[in-house]
Image (cartoon, rainbow, N blue to C red; front, side):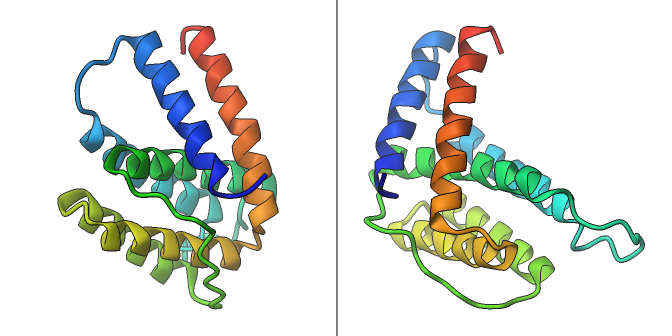
Length: 160
């Protein structure tokens, strides 16, 4: 499977959720807030900012699931605005995670307040840097997304 196919999978999931939950209004801001929350949950699992603690990060599988939770909302926001990437932005920079979480948060907020394609692409670039620094490959991300996508359908079917 190719990265750009995730946009179609997300569009189908969003349609299913809208029908299942009877959503007939614009939920762009809610999706934007959800994206910021998912990013924070990922940061929390990395524990990169917890200078006061000696406990290490969560297991890789937990981090990857949190990462793809963000990807769901990022794809959804792009679909809503008509922005799609043809390929995963390869940004291989070894960087401090705390710094990149803050930069990514700022990029998300910039996109929410001014939903331009340039701002959208910047968010993806920053997610690529996070993925690289967390050791996730594109194949890891696609596989985890597919698994979580099915889990999200199941949650909707079961009254999540």
